[in-house]
Image (cartoon, rainbow, N blue to C red; front, top):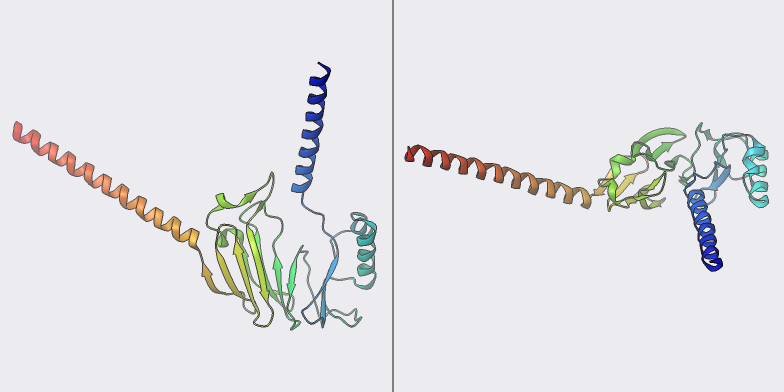
Length: 233
């Protein structure tokens, strides 16, 4: 009896810990201030979290908290700066993003969308001098939401992304097998591969053709039966 109770107790503890860890892992990370250098290091992009300094730094361990305090001591606005100690931005932005890609030309930027909970949300956006050029929603890039990795409150739709700074191109792959290549200067799609969408379209055509064939067969059969009935009469 004692052994059974012990196993039951340990099972409850393990279940509680696993549930807590899973919920914690599924929770959206809080925003935090950060800076990111452009390829070559000529520029630095600064992202200031939309919260007070104490809240911003207090969400993290001491080392990262100190980095956040230093960023906010030097910079007051989100935007692009020369990486020479200058505190006057070349251009600024009025939004927050967890992740960005900075071009070495000091002009172009790629913004990644937030934690995904709806296919209507932003997937990726393209900017020039801080101004929006083009944005894409998740639903524009995926064809089969059932193939995405879902958690309790979010889902993961992107398999990977690669920024080619030299050619100013961004390649993006989705979990459901699609691939897109974007022109970072215009935000336009240079090429795309949507094998999942092609398969779904093929299945739709095959299914539609089969249904029409069955309907035609049933109509012909009914017509023959009607003729047979008239002849018998």
